[in-house]
Length: 283
Image (cartoon, rainbow, N blue to C red; front, side):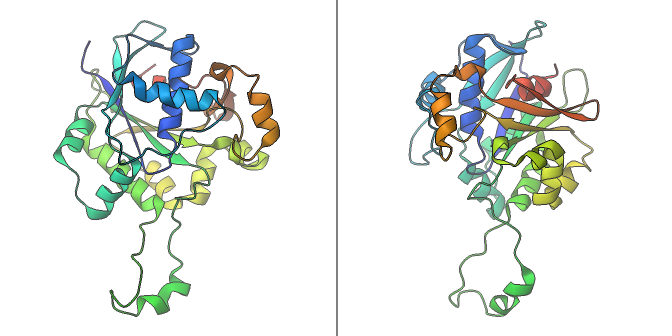
């Protein structure tokens, strides 16, 4: 195998783990433009996520107290290109977030980024852990007090963290073997949680509205090529929609979910969950 690799990056509760589980279901079923080129390392990790999804439950956020290893699986496109490793590093979303907040990126993380020539960057629709920008008008009175006088630590807005992760990817990802720029697929997860009008407008419009600073950074990248996707891994809300949950019991997991992507200037929906990874690889 060559040394091509695609890395998954995102903050806490951004949907990385559940996407990987759903992706693995497609790979096992042989459905999609991607094929597995071997067995993954640390297969217990991804099989446990699939077990949750099979039971009609989203996998919980990664437990930072559990010891596990990187999850890696070799992939190839249906055209039979050289295998590429998809790498889900053993860095939880909380660790990515805290590293950005503290401006301290461990050397091993930088090595993982520098050895990859593409990435998937995740953000989740309506995540309770998404932090909106501070309302400076209403917060100015609180900010007059010196730090340490009963003020809680101000959390970095999610879009600031996303911008910093994008900056890291631009600085550290390797050029492609053909000399082209590395690819970053921005994956907006839980896409089914939006109303029909928002979904019709597409994931780029969603980012411009909810995370305008991040959307602007995506439109001004020079070191990487960016493509934005909206992804729903099962096609509905298993937690709050009892009707959908009942229907899901009779569905095949590898046939559920979809990807929203731009095709010739039109937002289109495709049932192939593997598309963002395939594009990052270069299909």
